[in-house]
Length: 235
Image (cartoon, rainbow, N blue to C red; front, top):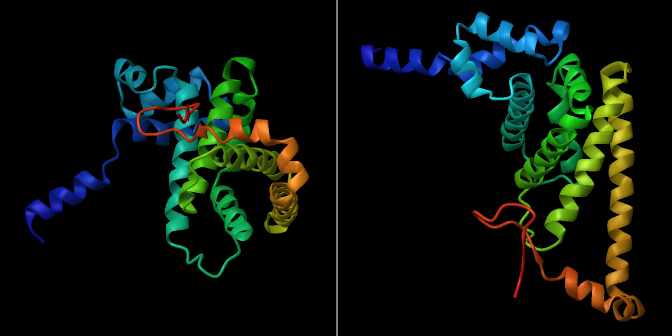
Protein backbone atom coordinates (compact mmCIF):
# COMPACT_ATOMS: atom_id res chain seq x y z
CA UNK A 1 0.00 0.00 0.00
CA UNK A 2 1.32 3.42 -0.92
CA UNK A 3 1.96 6.21 1.57
CA UNK A 4 -0.81 8.26 -0.01
CA UNK A 5 -3.34 5.43 0.46
CA UNK A 6 -2.22 4.94 4.06
CA UNK A 7 -2.66 8.64 4.80
CA UNK A 8 -6.08 8.64 3.15
CA UNK A 9 -7.23 5.72 5.30
CA UNK A 10 -5.88 7.42 8.42
CA UNK A 11 -7.76 10.61 7.60
CA UNK A 12 -10.95 8.66 6.96
CA UNK A 13 -10.66 6.86 10.29
CA UNK A 14 -10.14 10.06 12.26
CA UNK A 15 -13.48 11.48 13.43
CA UNK A 16 -14.24 15.14 12.95
CA UNK A 17 -14.32 17.35 16.07
CA UNK A 18 -18.13 17.29 16.03
CA UNK A 19 -18.20 13.49 15.84
CA UNK A 20 -15.49 13.19 18.50
CA UNK A 21 -17.51 15.42 20.82
CA UNK A 22 -20.62 13.34 20.32
CA UNK A 23 -18.76 10.06 20.83
CA UNK A 24 -17.23 11.39 24.04
CA UNK A 25 -20.60 12.64 25.29
CA UNK A 26 -22.19 9.20 24.99
CA UNK A 27 -19.98 7.95 27.82
CA UNK A 28 -21.32 10.61 30.20
CA UNK A 29 -25.01 10.75 29.30
CA UNK A 30 -26.03 7.66 31.33
CA UNK A 31 -24.70 9.37 34.45
CA UNK A 32 -25.30 13.09 33.87
CA UNK A 33 -27.96 13.10 31.15
CA UNK A 34 -27.85 15.44 28.18
CA UNK A 35 -26.60 18.26 30.37
CA UNK A 36 -24.04 21.04 30.50
CA UNK A 37 -21.92 18.78 32.71
CA UNK A 38 -21.88 16.16 29.95
CA UNK A 39 -21.09 18.78 27.31
CA UNK A 40 -18.08 20.14 29.18
CA UNK A 41 -16.78 16.67 30.05
CA UNK A 42 -17.13 15.59 26.42
CA UNK A 43 -15.17 18.60 25.19
CA UNK A 44 -12.37 17.84 27.65
CA UNK A 45 -12.31 14.12 26.79
CA UNK A 46 -12.30 14.80 23.05
CA UNK A 47 -9.59 17.42 23.34
CA UNK A 48 -11.83 20.05 21.76
CA UNK A 49 -11.46 23.59 23.05
CA UNK A 50 -14.51 25.18 24.68
CA UNK A 51 -14.81 27.85 21.97
CA UNK A 52 -14.80 25.31 19.14
CA UNK A 53 -17.13 23.00 21.07
CA UNK A 54 -19.62 25.83 21.52
CA UNK A 55 -19.31 26.79 17.86
CA UNK A 56 -20.09 23.21 16.82
CA UNK A 57 -22.95 22.81 19.29
CA UNK A 58 -24.18 26.33 20.19
CA UNK A 59 -26.82 25.07 22.62
CA UNK A 60 -24.51 22.53 24.16
CA UNK A 61 -26.07 19.25 25.22
CA UNK A 62 -29.39 19.95 23.47
CA UNK A 63 -27.62 20.06 20.12
CA UNK A 64 -25.59 16.99 21.08
CA UNK A 65 -28.81 15.09 21.79
CA UNK A 66 -30.21 16.15 18.42
CA UNK A 67 -26.99 15.07 16.72
CA UNK A 68 -27.27 11.66 18.38
CA UNK A 69 -30.84 11.36 17.10
CA UNK A 70 -29.76 12.37 13.59
CA UNK A 71 -26.98 9.78 13.69
CA UNK A 72 -29.56 7.11 14.47
CA UNK A 73 -31.64 8.25 11.51
CA UNK A 74 -28.62 8.03 9.23
CA UNK A 75 -27.79 4.51 10.42
CA UNK A 76 -31.40 3.46 9.84
CA UNK A 77 -31.23 4.82 6.28
CA UNK A 78 -28.09 2.79 5.61
CA UNK A 79 -29.69 -0.36 7.02
CA UNK A 80 -32.83 0.19 4.92
CA UNK A 81 -30.75 0.65 1.78
CA UNK A 82 -29.13 -2.74 2.38
CA UNK A 83 -32.49 -4.56 2.64
CA UNK A 84 -34.45 -6.14 -0.18
CA UNK A 85 -37.97 -4.81 0.35
CA UNK A 86 -39.44 -5.87 -2.97
CA UNK A 87 -41.49 -8.77 -1.58
CA UNK A 88 -42.70 -6.95 1.54
CA UNK A 89 -46.06 -5.30 2.06
CA UNK A 90 -45.86 -1.53 2.51
CA UNK A 91 -47.00 -1.74 6.13
CA UNK A 92 -44.27 -4.30 6.83
CA UNK A 93 -41.67 -2.01 5.29
CA UNK A 94 -42.71 0.78 7.65
CA UNK A 95 -42.57 -1.58 10.63
CA UNK A 96 -39.12 -2.77 9.56
CA UNK A 97 -37.84 0.79 9.35
CA UNK A 98 -38.95 1.56 12.90
CA UNK A 99 -37.49 -1.70 14.17
CA UNK A 100 -34.16 -0.94 12.53
CA UNK A 101 -34.27 2.56 14.02
CA UNK A 102 -34.70 1.21 17.56
CA UNK A 103 -32.86 -2.10 17.57
CA UNK A 104 -29.40 -0.52 17.52
CA UNK A 105 -30.30 2.43 19.74
CA UNK A 106 -29.04 2.67 23.31
CA UNK A 107 -32.12 2.63 25.50
CA UNK A 108 -30.59 4.70 28.30
CA UNK A 109 -29.39 7.38 25.88
CA UNK A 110 -32.85 7.55 24.32
CA UNK A 111 -34.48 7.62 27.76
CA UNK A 112 -32.33 10.56 28.77
CA UNK A 113 -33.17 12.28 25.51
CA UNK A 114 -36.89 11.75 26.09
CA UNK A 115 -36.51 13.38 29.48
CA UNK A 116 -34.72 16.35 27.95
CA UNK A 117 -37.26 16.87 25.18
CA UNK A 118 -40.20 16.54 27.54
CA UNK A 119 -39.17 19.90 29.03
CA UNK A 120 -41.35 22.73 27.68
CA UNK A 121 -38.40 24.73 26.36
CA UNK A 122 -37.16 21.77 24.31
CA UNK A 123 -40.47 20.14 23.31
CA UNK A 124 -40.42 21.72 19.85
CA UNK A 125 -36.94 20.29 19.21
CA UNK A 126 -38.15 16.84 20.22
CA UNK A 127 -41.21 17.03 17.99
CA UNK A 128 -39.06 18.22 15.08
CA UNK A 129 -36.64 15.32 15.58
CA UNK A 130 -39.47 12.78 15.49
CA UNK A 131 -40.92 14.43 12.38
CA UNK A 132 -37.50 14.21 10.71
CA UNK A 133 -37.32 10.50 11.54
CA UNK A 134 -40.71 9.97 9.93
CA UNK A 135 -39.53 11.95 6.90
CA UNK A 136 -36.38 9.81 6.64
CA UNK A 137 -38.47 6.64 6.74
CA UNK A 138 -40.82 7.79 3.98
CA UNK A 139 -37.84 8.96 1.95
CA UNK A 140 -36.18 5.55 2.34
CA UNK A 141 -39.41 3.90 1.18
CA UNK A 142 -39.48 6.07 -1.94
CA UNK A 143 -42.41 8.32 -1.08
CA UNK A 144 -43.11 10.70 -3.97
CA UNK A 145 -46.24 12.46 -2.68
CA UNK A 146 -46.34 16.18 -3.40
CA UNK A 147 -49.74 17.13 -1.99
CA UNK A 148 -51.31 17.09 1.48
CA UNK A 149 -50.46 13.38 1.73
CA UNK A 150 -46.83 14.42 2.22
CA UNK A 151 -47.87 15.94 5.55
CA UNK A 152 -50.45 13.37 6.65
CA UNK A 153 -48.04 10.49 6.07
CA UNK A 154 -45.36 12.09 8.22
CA UNK A 155 -47.75 13.26 10.90
CA UNK A 156 -49.29 9.80 11.21
CA UNK A 157 -45.94 8.05 11.25
CA UNK A 158 -44.61 10.54 13.82
CA UNK A 159 -47.43 9.49 16.14
CA UNK A 160 -46.75 5.80 15.58
CA UNK A 161 -43.01 6.21 16.06
CA UNK A 162 -43.34 8.38 19.18
CA UNK A 163 -45.78 5.97 20.84
CA UNK A 164 -43.59 2.99 19.94
CA UNK A 165 -40.50 4.63 21.45
CA UNK A 166 -42.32 5.24 24.74
CA UNK A 167 -43.53 1.63 24.79
CA UNK A 168 -40.04 0.36 23.94
CA UNK A 169 -38.48 2.31 26.80
CA UNK A 170 -40.61 0.42 29.30
CA UNK A 171 -40.48 -2.96 27.58
CA UNK A 172 -38.44 -5.72 29.22
CA UNK A 173 -39.81 -8.61 27.14
CA UNK A 174 -37.36 -10.93 25.42
CA UNK A 175 -36.12 -9.38 22.20
CA UNK A 176 -38.59 -6.53 22.77
CA UNK A 177 -41.32 -8.77 21.33
CA UNK A 178 -44.02 -6.80 23.15
CA UNK A 179 -42.83 -3.62 21.46
CA UNK A 180 -42.92 -5.12 17.98
CA UNK A 181 -46.41 -6.50 18.64
CA UNK A 182 -47.47 -3.04 19.79
CA UNK A 183 -45.95 -1.53 16.65
CA UNK A 184 -47.82 -3.97 14.42
CA UNK A 185 -51.10 -3.06 16.12
CA UNK A 186 -50.50 0.65 15.65
CA UNK A 187 -49.67 0.25 11.97
CA UNK A 188 -52.71 -1.98 11.49
CA UNK A 189 -54.83 0.80 12.98
CA UNK A 190 -53.31 3.34 10.60
CA UNK A 191 -54.00 1.09 7.63
CA UNK A 192 -57.67 0.84 8.65
CA UNK A 193 -57.86 4.63 8.70
CA UNK A 194 -56.30 4.81 5.24
CA UNK A 195 -58.85 2.31 3.92
CA UNK A 196 -61.65 4.40 5.42
CA UNK A 197 -60.26 7.54 3.77
CA UNK A 198 -60.09 5.72 0.42
CA UNK A 199 -63.70 4.57 0.71
CA UNK A 200 -64.82 8.14 1.50
CA UNK A 201 -63.05 9.45 -1.59
CA UNK A 202 -65.01 6.93 -3.67
CA UNK A 203 -68.33 7.76 -2.00
CA UNK A 204 -70.43 10.12 -4.15
CA UNK A 205 -72.27 11.65 -1.17
CA UNK A 206 -69.03 12.25 0.74
CA UNK A 207 -67.49 13.85 -2.35
CA UNK A 208 -70.42 16.28 -2.55
CA UNK A 209 -70.42 17.16 1.15
CA UNK A 210 -66.65 17.56 1.31
CA UNK A 211 -66.20 19.26 -2.05
CA UNK A 212 -65.22 22.62 -0.53
CA UNK A 213 -62.72 21.36 2.06
CA UNK A 214 -61.22 18.91 -0.45
CA UNK A 215 -60.72 21.70 -2.96
CA UNK A 216 -58.76 23.72 -0.40
CA UNK A 217 -56.75 20.71 0.75
CA UNK A 218 -55.95 19.94 -2.88
CA UNK A 219 -54.02 23.21 -3.12
CA UNK A 220 -51.52 22.18 -0.44
CA UNK A 221 -48.12 21.17 -1.76
CA UNK A 222 -45.13 19.52 -0.13
CA UNK A 223 -42.11 21.71 0.65
CA UNK A 224 -40.06 22.38 -2.47
CA UNK A 225 -36.35 23.04 -2.74
CA UNK A 226 -35.58 26.10 -0.70
CA UNK A 227 -39.18 26.69 0.38
CA UNK A 228 -39.05 24.80 3.66
CA UNK A 229 -41.99 24.03 5.89
CA UNK A 230 -44.91 24.47 6.06
CA UNK A 231 -45.03 24.10 2.27
CA UNK A 232 -46.91 26.15 -0.26
CA UNK A 233 -50.22 26.64 -2.04
CA UNK A 234 -50.64 25.90 -5.71
CA UNK A 235 -52.10 28.56 -7.99
